Length: 370
Figure 1: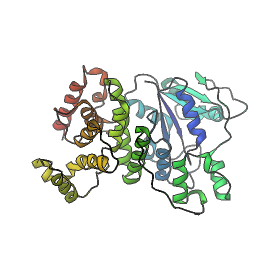
Figure 2: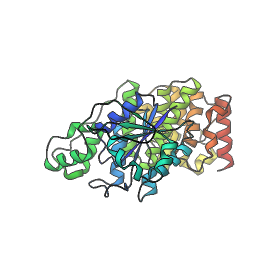
Figure 3: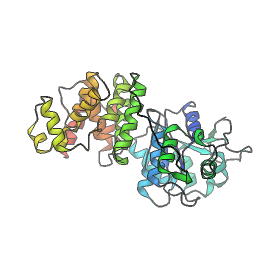
Figure 4: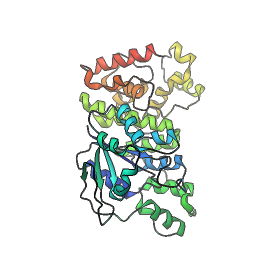
């Protein structure tokens, strides 16, 4: 799978960013990782939105799309963001088999040689240059140029339009617009914050988008990213082992929806549903949050797919008697890429003869290290 990296301040993320990411996807890339910078060495500190605001807007812009993801490694490192550090980190954590693509705007070509370890960046990545200027500068390193139309959109343009009260709303994805308006970012003046409650849709992609929004709004940023990384890994594993990837994504994005539910509520829920509570679950009721999430999917979102419900219900402790999807969600939950302490070799799905072998390897590793 060919992975590409698109970094930037994303202050805010806009349709131009997503257009370039989409163009990379149509030119041989399978997934694009959007990496928000904490602070660029060539820009002053991002104004108008905090790192958490920019992260929230990025997550809102890619809901339900398994070809795009967000990584917060530069925000976690804080300080000045250097591309070479991000490349090394992503190659290691994502276990990339081939060079990642690095997407650059051609407006960066003239200053690329000033980047830290520019020649090393060029060696470790396949540089992909998108057009942003009419006159494209010469670039001395190996690269591929995208033959894209120039979109006259920039984050600075959008920030200016917002502050001046001009039309800007459709230069960003709907989820980003909602965050800017709700958080009064970039000088936005509140008009009407009334938000209608979305209705449940039977289409699985629309259901996923609804669940992803629920997870993003209801979970902490780190817990939401964990859920999305779980969904992505479940998607990949389902494709690898011949299961429906959309079912894997849905189970993955929703598996921790009840992570913060009160212990007494979880125990009451388990008892009222006739669930046989294990001694360790009675001692630590938070282990029942998978049961809570499955109950929520069934009663609130009318999801009746027993494979999905079983996968969410049993993702915490795992079960050798569980079905294939449940095993995939257990694996993805335990070893997705933000689990920095996990042996990265466990993510090498090609190293296993089948799903059961991978499940047992992860199950044994977790119990030996817990």
